[in-house]
Amino acid sequence: MKFYTRDSAVFSRLTVPDHLCGWDRLVHGGVISTILDEVMSWTGIYLLKQITMTKSMTVDFIKPVYINSELKAEGLVLEKTGKHEALLEGRLYNQEDTLCARSRATFVIFSPAVAKRLGIARKEHLEWFEEIYNF
Image (cartoon, rainbow, N blue to C red; front, side, top):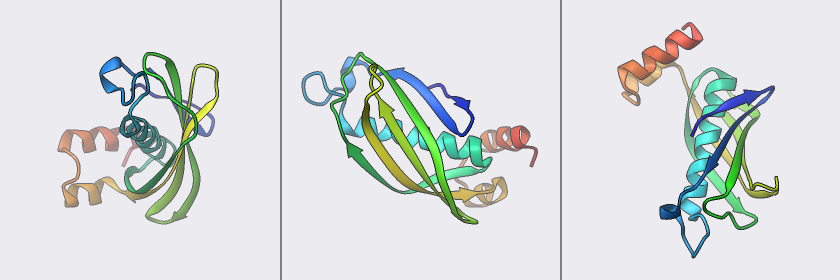
């Protein structure tokens, strides 16, 4: 997935290939959940300017999502609920811009120093993050 931003949201456009289908031509629910988790994670990284990790997540599957069709994923920060947590929302739209799935998740927020201490990311990833956000 490639991500871009506009104002207070992060987006990605993607097409899910055949081999990730569940029933017949439908995108597997686990793949939909992964797409939503990923867009929310990058939303937290970009908009909160912190390292984020999913703590809990719920997904509502609203409409069928079909393989080989253009989709738009959108991520929003709903609320920073504390120094180390934030509530985010992910949305997945079909090519007609109909909402097909929605997720809400609590994300834990880490500084690069804490991420290093916990060993949750490789050194080069943390260096990239520190360079981008001038830590």
